[in-house]
Image (cartoon, rainbow, N blue to C red; front, side, top):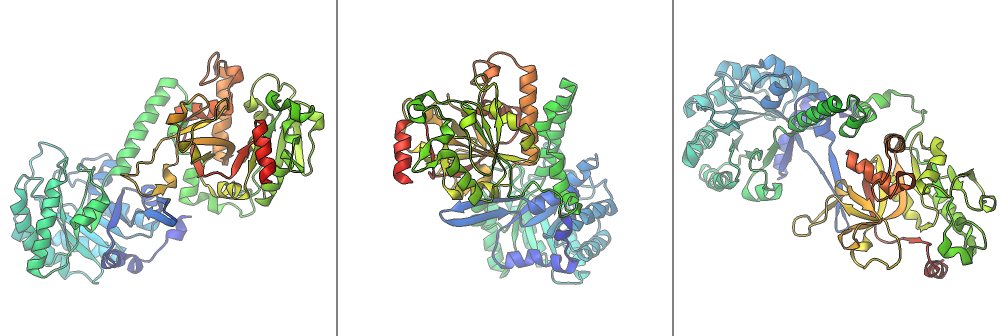
Length: 575
């Protein structure tokens, strides 16, 4: 809820200085309205470094002149009034709690700048960055634009005037050097930095539009020497928009204290909006555009609408999520062990396979269990479950049995293959997942060859782990790129174990895609020879191809599929 982000100006204002005093490299994301402010404020990824939990998020928000003016449909030439900018700033401050750095353009003349400093400080802004160009400025990133720099002593006097009207020691004025943009070189940039530092500026931002970080790294090295000469400690800021191949870790090692991602939310939003509009025009309906759009519920969640609903209304994060176990088919390979019973009724160490699944689910507070029977349905029984019958189980696939329980999918559900034994902790971890569609995937397939004669559903992760580049495995990276049983095992990163969770939104996407495929497709479909036989993994791959995100929960062992005589022996041995 956005009200949770409420903070007083005097509390927020000093946060940036506190972070810098702690020695932290401050990671900053651009925002241009309230919603993008919420995204920048709340975005987070979690991961593990060994056994240590790691969380990454943005430390501060950048209110950009470029994205503010562009979001209003105007060029970045200081045509937007400061009052209009201040309205946007207050919109963002109202729904966030992290420190804000404002792009102050040139700051206007010294009189204008005094009023800018006073108003921003009063609002709770932590810092303003002004560039040493002549008003009205032209955006620095466009090639061929004439860039006229202000005389450094005139700009230094503007800094002094701004510092003189500050009411607290929390607010920071940072000078943005445009020497490299204007082609004046390193020496000019260092001389200007010296003059501005002597004028009392709180930090320096070096700007560059080079594709290579070499010139800003060279400046950073010289800047350290300059600070040593002046006996000062003042933070150094960079904006790696064009030289975006350098990492935060490398920038920090070079001496940068603040790293600003200055326009990425607006640029990504613009690209998505263009794609959505073209998709709707091409198809004359919005169905194909849905994967490109955030669900309406996500917007409701972000802006606090869902929190306004009554607390006792049904919530999709409820632990008692419905579980559907499709168990209609017959397994000919195990026929000698079944004596005419469904596989789910096979005894494993004195209990039926189904009873063991129910026990595991109940341990995780999952009590709403529906089993879809077909073959020998009259012999399917267990306490505390609902049994539905697929009368046409000999035709179609397990996916069609799953949809016999369509009514259980309305508010989200869990699907479990009927021949899978699980350790309790796996369902517990799955319930903690917040993504809309999550498949449980075992990573041990990377370490041993595929089992001959066994049909396995393999996964190829979108973000393959590269040990030389990443040392932390982030949950955010666990996205399925490919899934199916015809994937070459050597290319697979994981195996799908037959357990999946769908939120309310994920279930809606799953059902809509299924219905569209059944109504509008004929013949071969994904890995199926005919749409009439398409499987759960075929449908998931179709959703991925349409642009829906499918995540996976990575596990390492802790499960067993009962498919062969050896599996039965192994299960009896363990249990």
